[in-house]
Amino acid sequence: MEIAIQKLKKKLARAERVTVLTGAGISAESGVPTFRGADGMWKNYQATELATPQAFARDPELVWAFYNWRRDLISKVTFNAAHQALVDLEDQVPHFTLITQNVDGLHLLAGSRNLLELHGDLWKVRCTKCERVVLDRSPDMGTLPTCAHCGGLLRPHVVWFGESLDPDVLGSAVEAARSSEVMLVIGTSAIVQPAASLGLEAKAAGATVAEINLEATGQSGAMDYAIHGKAGDIVPRLVGEGT
Ligand code: BV8
Ligand code: ZN
Image (cartoon, rainbow, N blue to C red; front, side, top):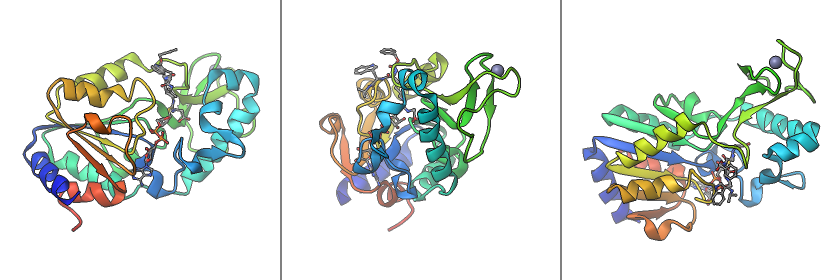
């Protein structure tokens, strides 16, 4: 692993265009449960069962209880060394794009600037009637929050399974992946589409692609570098911090 880190660190130091894709694993060391790990459960539900329009239509109070639980939990944590290292990398690289699957807002909190939130933002809510989107940082939005403007039922402004991503955000993410010299894929099980295709897009367009993840994934074999360990340990070392 040491040699891979040193070689990748040198490539990053010389690169003009770097793209990074992150998943729940980069926030794990901040104390945010991942989606598919053992900690990915909430009560006796899988997060993936609740993050769907069908679940919300069937039982909006249950889905809001899930999102209020996540709001409360995430309101008490902060970004970690891996988030910080990506802010430092952005300062060093002429053309840097950070694409995240996470909705926890920790990259923004750490100070990342050129950020694409593929799956939306936990701290935004959208009215199911008038479609207004509002930033609301309350740790608890109440059992069935309603729109101040029209009284319609509010929903989290996130992309649920079975819902399409914002085409502009996705288009910018594909463009950034395809035009990168180096792409880092950090803390994702590379299962959820279309996010998981971005690393392979970069590779197909000629980029050097590296996976930094606690464990191997289905894409490890396609990577130029597959570095397995904690993001909080590895990413700062790639960016010239840490020993
Ligand atoms: C769509 C927001 C068009 C909500 C989320 C093609 C093939 C197969 C399926 C599909 C396909 N196209 C579409 C689908 C269906 C679906 C899909 O991909 N399903 C999967 C389950 C197979 N995709 C969609 O529905 C997408 N929509 O494509 O629209 C369409 C429309 C209709 C019909 C078809 C197509 C929308 C997907 C967006 C879903 N919303 N989040 C919310 O968060 O509340 S996704 C959710 O999963 C989170 O955003 C999360 O980030 C994301 C991905 O999970 P990961 O980030 O990878 O997290 P995970 O827990 O899985 O892994 C964490 C990793 O970190 C692990 O590997 C672990 O080892 C590692 N780790 C842990 N600790 C550390 C660490 N690594 C480093 N350091 C550590 N300390
Ligand atoms: Zn409304």
